[in-house]
Length: 132
Length: 132
DNA sequence: ATTAATGCAAACACTTTGCAATGGA
DNA sequence: TCCATTGCAAAGTGTTTGCATTAAT
Image 1 (cartoon, rainbow over the protein chains, first blue to last red):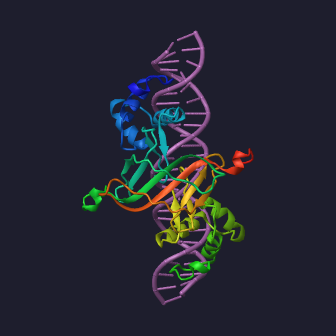
Image 2: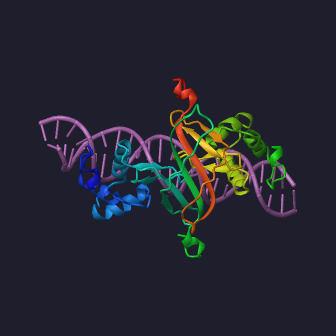
Image 3: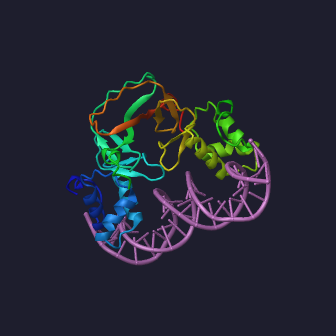
């Protein structure tokens, strides 16, 4: 929550709960994931409020909406440029902080950002454990 | 259609229409896009049939489902490894055939494939034209 | 003749919207 | 006080499913 304190968000208890959950979160949760957790503490919480808050944060650039999952958005509070490692078996998404210098042959396209997705099998799943 | 002729698909007129439309298509169409086009020629065509065919092709590895668009899958008949250039204004997706050699620091994750997404503004939109 | 594919509608999953009630600033 | 936010429910998208009918092999 601290890192968001200077935002111009109206700090309702619901938003504080969401911000607290998101702070430093590396799980790339979906709206539903977030809802499930914060609803425990705030039983009146509605999914619409979660979406509302996520949208507000996204608009302020304090959150990144990932389109990695088909049909379900995942949210990433880590706004520094980074990439993702996606296990195709257990669907876990992990951060990759390596900086890749990717040069595009087509110079007439103004690239503002780039994102690398690595697909494969994570160590857990390789060992036959994984699969949620 | 020719390139799919050796697949084990039951070749119904509907599938032939879809395969014809997909052949060499560079537009990364959604299921709805495909439906709109093929339904002109086959008025009885149903969206479920489009999904059915897309799934069959995907399962056979003759088509790639892209998760670039939030909430709407896009399909790519180009199955050779390549990357994408996405205009954030007009949402156009263009292919990038450059081969990037991306080395991952984490060696315990078995990377099977990687995909680079470049976001930015395409030439058309830069010139103030774009925006569909 | 077999059996997969079609097409319709209904079901689903995720997200957005409308709006009266609430409560931060 | 004022106006953004909440929470509920309803509506909106995109996708999947069930099932009787149809048709490719």
